[in-house]
Structure formats: C-alpha cells, structure tokens
Length: 232
Image (cartoon, rainbow, N blue to C red; front, side):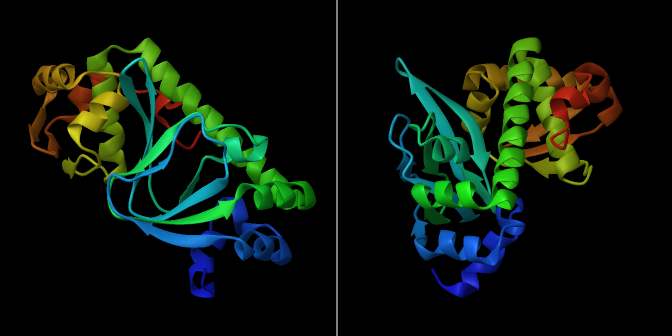
C-alpha cells in the first residue's frame, strides 16, 4: 500500500483512535487490490485470513443453504467486513462478492489480532464496532420476523427516503432482485408489494421511487427507532 491511501483507512472509527505504531503494524502487511464486478471475494466456511476494507465500489454479503441464497447486507465505502471472524479466528459465516468495480484493502487477520491484544484503544474500537453490528443484526431480524412483506418494503423505502435527505424521489441503491433477497422476499412478491404500496402514494419507474404522500406511507408502515434507526 502507498501512504496516500492511509488517511481514508485511518479515518474509520475502528482505526481512528489507535496508536501510530499500531496502525503502522496493521498497514505493514496490508495490500490494496481492485476487483471487477461479480468477483467472489470470500466464501462462507473459509478461514478468515484477512480483514477487508471497502474503499471504493460495493460488496454484497450473502449466504447459501440447500440451493437457496439470501442477501445479508451491502457494504459500501469506507467500511470493513468481516471483523467478528477475524477477531475470533473463525470461519466466515457469509460469502462476499463485488457488485461493481471495487477497491479493497486486505489486512492480515493475524496482524489485526496482534494489535487487538496490544492496543487498548483498538480493542475498545473493536468492541464498539461489533456491538453496533450485533444491534444491526437484531434490528434486521425483528424487521423480518415482526413485519409482513409489504410492511418491510414500506419501512425500507422510508429509510431510503431519509438517507436521500427526505427527497420526494430517489434511486434504489441495489437491484430489485437483490432488494427482494435482503427483505426476505421473492422478486415476484416484491413486485406485488410495490403495487400494493401504490395505494399509499408510492410510484416506481425502474430503480426510481417517488413517495407522493410520505405521511400516508408512514401511517401504514409505522416505523420505530428500535428497528429502523441505524444510529441507536
């Protein structure tokens, strides 16, 4: 890696507070690589050899069982995956593939564990990162188990509207088939759910979404910060 690539990595909450020599130890064995779209980066069950940092593009985390696939999350810059497997020296529980042309920093997992043992600030940052990931998983589980498919889509659209600065119209950040998998639906069910939400002012044109009456959609979706607020 070149030193010019260090600042964006250093700015991550995971690395921001650690000692300079600890950060140097992590970067000493790290390397930067660019991948084209649709490249498998890791496979569930493989040993966790590296902590990955996405600095450009997008990476899809997914899992498979008995001929079925599901999307767990989409990782965008600048963020890491999969920290828990790295710290525990355990197999990956998810697979990862690039969605678009992506640039990643790969940090050897053993170096991460060594710095975790030696640097209290890094250890605290790891705990905070894993705690946030745990809470995100709990929220996503609640979303899947407590809401029907139309309610899940409605709340997802409200979260995307908020991320777009409460704009009346916005673009879906992922393809609809990937969105369906993330929401625990088939593509056909997703299409039916979009049609059902037309009654609440939702208009779609490909990846473009317009919410004509946000208050009407909020009344149907009944969002709660205990599921939908990513900062809690």
